[in-house]
Image (tube, rainbow, N blue to C red; front, side):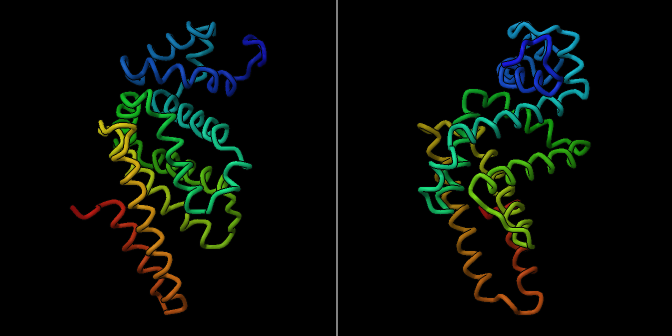
Length: 220
């Protein structure tokens, strides 16, 4: 690792993000969490403050980016290549849950901040980025409409799973894993249906919109 004094702001964000999440669980996504993470890692507090000058969402963004990177470390390409596409996606989401588990309170606070109307656009971009990282890790190289529909669908599945996960007290988060499995099964059924109606004027687009609506507002 580079000497701290020579680090860029991006490198400082990457260094502090995982530590900052632990402090955010108690102190919220505020400048106090940045200061404590900086003290723990030996970073000048003024430089740390500059690295997160955009406030809470910038802090959350850096934390989620660290989860992206750590997920790839946990599940390298050679491991994923032994799995089916379906199992790859499940494994990638579950790996993220395992990485987030020690900081669930920080995640709960982060979700509350991202749910604010003023942060809606940034929240959408973060959800898209997570889905994109997962699909790329799974080996997806689609460049047509499928590139967008896959990511939109997975972003919805992942967001819904996180909402279950933050309140999941079951052993090894079994309820969240079961919820995820059901959602992925729903996606697979939808893909089979889409294949059957492919070519029918407007049908594919209408079905996708209805499916995304069910992801956002699942039936009780």
